[in-house]
Length: 117
Image (cartoon, rainbow, N blue to C red):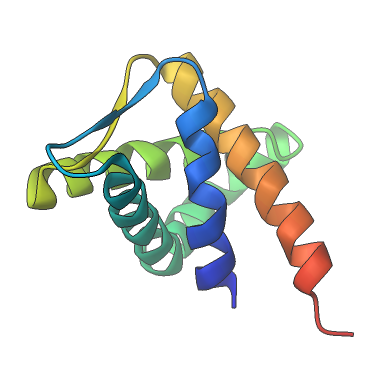
């Protein structure tokens, strides 16, 4: 379920200033492919990075977790641009950081709405 929620929360990044949608096809396809890449990365690589960054995350009271999310967003954009020639162009670290905050908030809201009781 997390996979689908993350995939549905990714199009919100489209609204963040400093992030542009790339690709020769429809822009919603680029967002869907990047969302798919981000969801797959979050399922596979992110848990390992969270484990490795646990000491720093504890020292910063969880703020470093947002840096890990930002790195995953950069990786998803790089993968979707490299493999499919569609995806996002991230102009700065600040834009990616803000986008990771927005994705986290939207995912949390969607998880609370869809949560199994």
